[in-house]
Image 1 (cartoon, one colour):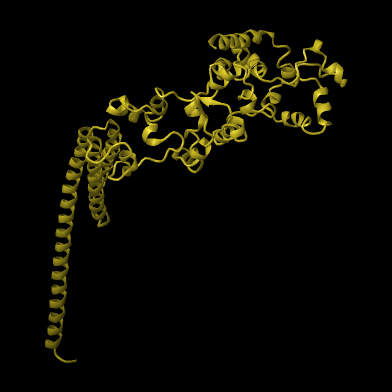
Image 2 (cartoon, rainbow, N blue to C red):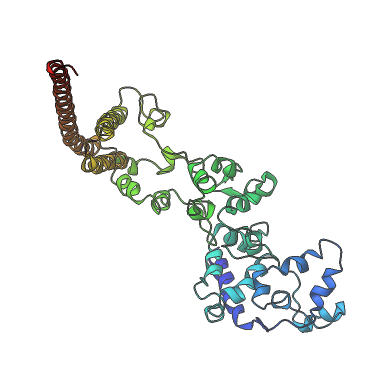
Length: 421
């Protein structure tokens, strides 16, 4: 099979120099468009869609992909093989057609200097490419994802490979049981529920609700042109691309040598939920799913859970103290900064959970508790000072009132001593 893949890749690269008349100004009268525009559907669609195609905007025409003579309105003459007419490419011919331009660095520099030119080589070693080389023409090729006509830039919101639309594009095939029938992964039939699972995930929520276009979608984990399921030895590396700190801690843990699915063992593959502290809590299906009552693993989880919950409670108590003092008018800006640093310790503790080492979690928690203790002392001192200020104010107001009352009676006494009239 390796020889087949190498042959396919070589064929793509050999084809590149024989690109005929590419990127030449389109003829003033394009017979392809004129003819197809008058045909019934679906033959009219290519001419209509191509008007908004990025290739049309760059000066390409139908002949650059299909060959033929666009200067004639005679159907037979336009499709004469002598003119280089290739018709509608299918299977490997699709990849070869696209690679004639997109695999040529010198040529692509004129249009998209930063675009990679190894897509065909990547595709050849992908899950799709390997199956195509074996003769499976039902797999995705370039046009399956980008479309054959009306192709738009990846940054165009209407592009089928725009981040918000990637999952639906992949799902067009991968959620179709009839299409996926006969395909397997290591002898196991491909599931068709990935899209439904992904749409329940924290990644999907961040992408669609949070409008975070950098949130992971299908190609971020599986690859684009080199798309392939991550092997069991690659899951941690894939997740670690974004979650580097967690992956680094996990690699130090005992689970790294036990779990075959790495991160997915606890967080799932596609239905990845937002992680929370309840995953460690007693009765959690996450830890209890592997560890039984009385086992060391469950005791470790409960110890880490208790440490984190203790820090959370202390943060809430100290935060309330600082807020009361601040609301009362005391200067607490220094303590508010320190409180944010203490909250960072909670984040670090949650990161250390992936070592599955209670001592590592406890160390971070203890540092946070020490910071909170210092803040508490400052907060309590501020509240004591506030009481002194209030007491002093009350005494001062009382003395002033006594003075006013005494002055009032003194004035009345003087009024009585004055002779009448």
